[in-house]
Image (cartoon, rainbow, N blue to C red; front, side, top):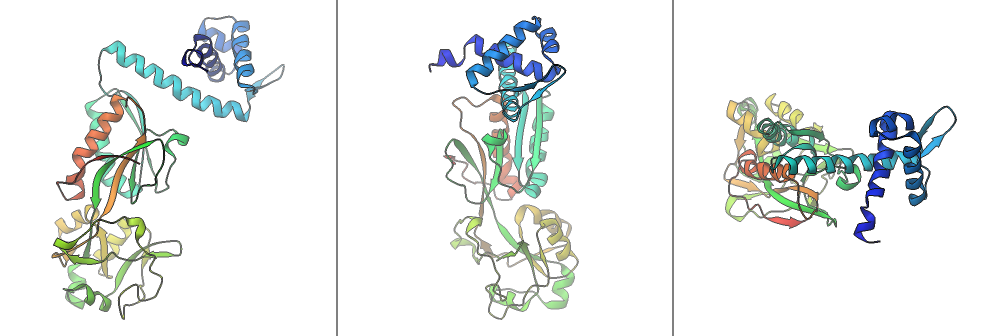
Length: 335
């Protein structure tokens, strides 16, 4: 099938009639919206069903409702028609300003603290840009679920059809409250951590081990996905204690550390505020852990929309300051 067949006016008119019928709740309502007769709408939808070889509506003499196939097709069609409308608006306005709806998915906590403020500031600058942000630690299929952009932490999968751009890396630092250190002493070497209470991050049955802390000059970047669940009791430290506290929320870990319950290993971006206010103190600042990569990922298109380009540029520009380490290489890669 050639491109002229794929995008023929007849094909698009059938899709428009189908979407209008769903939105209006009837063929008669669609006819009124499209300034056509009810018969013309019915014929366009019948040709569409014939071409697709599926039934889009269950019809009776009194009602009509979508089939499962019709519901799936409707969701895809509305997205396509919205994008066409936005493209026409951009061209008619003679501008490449960001406009239309941008759907972004991101991990919950770094999304709330680092990503969302940048995107909201971008939307404030461009009033025609609409944002839909989803905060989830689930790895979302961008194409299947209709997202324009994702922020992903850790190693990227080799996924065809996606592009990626680095936002830098999240470095981990050790912290404790002044009260905890006054009572238990301050460790100056990684080996001394075995004598302290450690607040651990865990999900389900997996308790994740802290990264290795080494002198700053010898640090190498690795993926967070290479961390080994620490279920051995000692958690990698000879004589180490079995942790009393295992939490799956970084904010809760900060709270536990501020209350003097132990030493915590945190991403530098979430530790920044308690360090500034003095509720936490950084330990062993002469050491550094391997970083966790952070990327932007989006469906590969020949011509990214102005809204997508603007969001990517804004996040790349802001990321080094947000993550606490300027000078990161922001190269473009395949996901």
